[in-house]
Image (cartoon, rainbow, N blue to C red):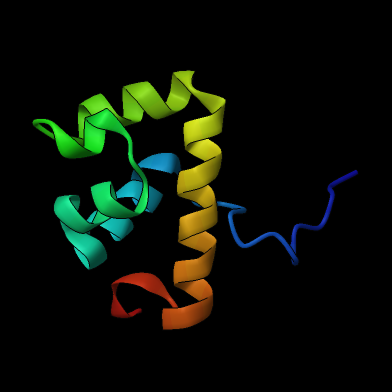
Length: 80
């Protein structure tokens, strides 16, 4: 039986898409100011950030929370 995920704004959103949307909107500098994670402030890249976020639950939770706030304030990411 499938579970409905209607109230879960992260359902179907990959971590890579989530991160790319935040970087496109905020940029690495502002993202690093909002969430003080070294992979956002020192030689940032999507690949290194994804690797860190997948292994670090507390950091991933902060990024997901920022993404949810982003969706609530700005609507759908990427202008779609």
